Length: 324
Image (cartoon, rainbow, N blue to C red; front, side, top):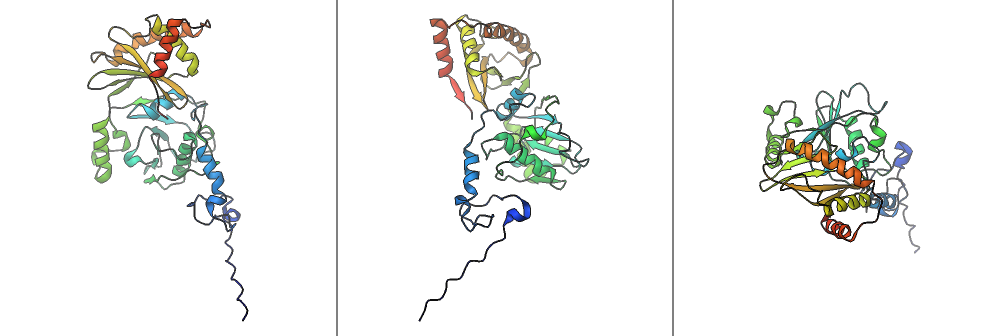
């Protein structure tokens, strides 16, 4: 008796033919392109490669790059009005506002009036934070008013913030003491949102933005205060300059203050000073401006570091922490 011919699996209609895009699915699922292979062995390879490619300076090219980094990594509660590029949205979007964080860690929220809140402190899935944020923004633009945007894996090859925002518009953060900006009327909050608001307000570290210099933020903690200053100077050049100032005893911001090290975040360097508890943000304004002048002067010094300056530089490097 002859063997029965094996039945051929029905061919799936290619999703590409319908939408022009390949949706992201589970690694072991059939690829939506209709090839009959698993996603991980087909178009998932491209997606996996995109995830592994880390963009070290995701906010480069945007106005206020240093403030983008500060709001992403250092500032608990802040908002910034964003201006969309021409043609990105219609008249049904009255405003778009960047927020450090949103309730329940939503990537974005479309309010009842059609306005959008875009969360900055969200998990990155593609290795390019700018692309992840742009994906959340585009999803919010297509979402019905009164609806939060759920988290999803970013589709490779999508647009970035640099494509969606007007890069000629100013970037002016407003730092808040709490997260009431989440809601149009915070007093009416109930359920999970109200509980999330209460937890967020209880954990927020007091933070203020300095006005005398760019992207410098004072914060207060129970034991001591700090100044964290995001700088766009290339890292190696900045470390040389900080080492020169440290060796000369000119790296502090006044009595009982000390440059204790730096963070590395999204391709930028963030020097950090310990401050006494009595030193407020207003007290930092003049010393920070004077330090900025000293820093500008030594940045122009191209001579080799002395032995003492090299030791100071090594000490700074040993105390540097990478946030991402």
